[in-house]
Image 1 (tube, one colour):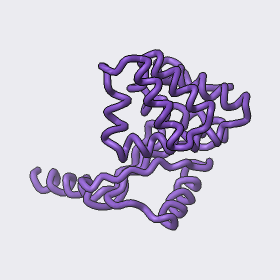
Image 2 (cartoon, rainbow, N blue to C red):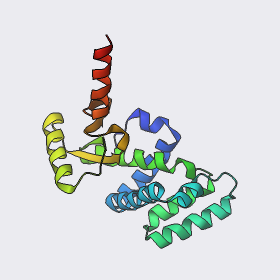
Image 3 (tube, one colour):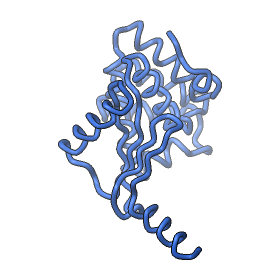
Length: 184
């Protein structure tokens, strides 16, 4: 498997590579990705879950039992549940968001896709996502997997990051540029 040095160099990246290799060997890449997507959503939506994974006071045993119970109630697959137990036993649950991002990158590379982080002022509907993917595919020449985020502070437009490239068409940036032009 080919991975970038940046992913393997980080602690979360090493965990993600290990999970990816186990999932690949067990033909469960998409199953694990689905489970990690559910966990990612839970971290974003639940303050209690976010505080659980970031709680340094919780003992290894308690963290392991709690994360196993949460995984069971969420219907997380067995491999991902065991992986969460390893993170809890090693006191690395706080690394979970970074592990998920690294896994998503590894999976995209494996599928020949490029990952794009898209920030919009309002949630994008499925037609907008499809159109954006088609436009980005035409621009980069490969399929594009989107990580959509919402940030009302950009006022409108989009901010798209693909690797080290950033396309910022947000109204906030345009207004800031106009203000700078008017100053001088």
